[in-house]
Amino acid sequence: MGLFDRFASIEQAHTDVKARVDDPFGVRMDRMLSATEAVIGNRPTILVGTNNYLGLTFDPACVEAAHKALDAYGTGTTGSRIANGSYAPHRDLETELADFYGRRHCMVFTTGYQANLGIISTLAGPQDFLLIDADSHASIYDACRLGTATVVRFKHNDAEDLDKRLRRLADEPGNKVVVTEGIYSMLGDQAPLKEMAEVKRKHGAWMVLDEAHSMGVLGATGRGLAEEQGVEADMDFIVGTFSKSLGAVGGFCVSDHPQFDLLRIVCRPYMFTASLPPSVVASATEALRQIRKRPELRTQLWENVATLYNGFARHGFSLGPQMGPVVAIKLPSPDLAVGFWRALLDRGIYVNLALPPATPQGTALLRCSVCAAHTRAQLDKVVAVTAAIGREFGVIGAADLRAAG
Ligand code: PMP
Image (tube, rainbow, N blue to C red; front, side):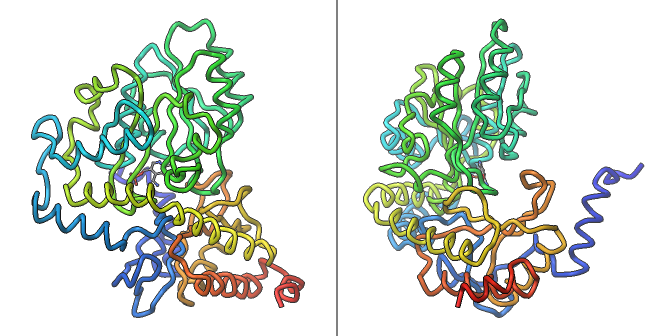
């Protein structure tokens, strides 16, 4: 029995894909030209496969803040917050995030993955129950595996199913912790938080919300889906990441729970890994300030979302159910998706190839993401080129060609 035998089917699928196109999961950005353009294999390429929703990766104020912190604090902290000390920028960012969300407490983690891993695995103990959406991100599933609670999955975005499952646990003395996401990363659909909050309240459960893809994107002030749906008070723990709209790397959790800070000394994914480099923390802090003082970034993002989503829809592509910064084109087979993805790259457009089993309902997807910094010309080109390839591949019909002029 070989050490890697259990990965044989994944290895074979990957080999098959690579036989047809260069490794789609090993694309190399040789040079970054801007937040929305990179040189890939000598070709300037429009980036429509990032999570850089507000385009802040090259924002002058964010870059300058990182430079300053690099000079002041050095390249890294070389250790964890509890063993080796917190630097001032980590504490300052926690204060600013808590203030942004109007919460008493905030913990900054080294990644959003670790924030979910740490918060979810630590909150629910051996007598407790974790109720997670079936389409949860890998970090939520991994948190369940790290933790000791009993895990119950409910149907994706189905508040009624959540209600049914919580009812079945009514006689159990343990805590019930519901976990959901704001915007889902693959299809871009949003959780029915209002309905879920009602269910959660009815059963006296706790709720953890991952706003990874919705922070800076949704809500009157950019706090996310809970703000948009007016249910922030029901979200006991909000998790987020710096790797998307904040344009950096890192994660956080905010809460009003009076014992929240206890997590700093019991949450292993917080305690046993090095803290973020201060330069990263500084750029994330500046990005948060940009989100707060430049609501026009969100307005521009949504204008761009409408251009891309409506552009694809007009040509007859089958898209995810909800308009948002994640725009997923559903394709009939993984083979077709691989060819389509490669054809786009050959014509200077980079999107994400998402194949089963990593996708909901086993769909093959071209996952596109919109950025506030995309120009109208870039988006028009993306729509036109994608439509041309769609016709070549027979994904959309000739009638769509006429409709598109
Ligand atoms: N939650 C969700 C829903 C995500 O999509 C991701 C990353 N794609 C994460 C958490 C992890 O974030 P990070 O990149 O900061 O580890």
